[in-house]
Amino acid sequence: MVAALLLGGGYAVWSARGDSPRNDAGWLDSLDGVQGSWVSNAGFASDGTKPWTTPVRLTIRDDVLSLYAACNHLGAKVAVEDHRVFANGGVGMTQIGCPEEPAAVDAWLAALIDNHATVALKGSTEGSMLAFDTDAGWIGFIRGDQ
Image 1 (cartoon, rainbow, N blue to C red):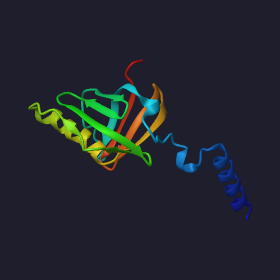
Image 2 (tube, rainbow, N blue to C red; image 1 turned 180 degrees about the vertical axis):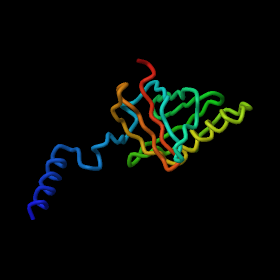
Image 3 (cartoon, rainbow, N blue to C red; image 1 turned 180 degrees about the horizontal axis):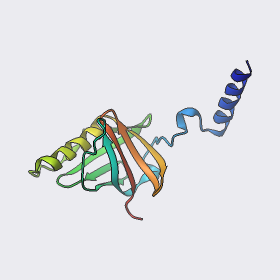
Image 4 (cartoon, one colour; image 1 turned 60 degrees about the vertical axis):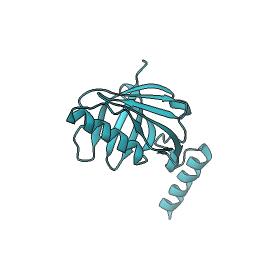
C-alpha cells in the first residue's frame, strides 16, 4: 500500500512538472530546437557493429534532413510525430557509383529514416547528442558547428 502511494505520488509530481515518464528521456516532438549542423562518430548497427569508418554529417534546416557520410548525399523532408521521424515522400539520394562500404553506409542511413527512427536529445561527454534509434541500429550526433 505504501509503495502504491509513493509511486502514485511520484507520477503526480512528474505530471505536474510536465515531464511524465514518457517525456523524461529528451524525446523530441519537432526539429525546431535542433536546427543546424551535427556530426557523428558514434553509432551501432543492431548486431553491435559500427557500420561506418568516416564521420556522418547531418544538417537540419526547417523540416529537411540532409545526411552525408562518404559518397552520396541523402535528403528527406520529415515530420516528427510521437517522437519518431517520418520522411514525407521517402529519402532521396544522389546516385554516385560508390564502393561497397560507403554504399552500405548510405543504405543504412536511408533505412534509419525510412524505418521511422525515434529521435531524442540526450546528454553526452561532448555536449548535447541528437540520437536516432530503430531496430536496425542507433546513431548519435553532436553539434558540428562547435
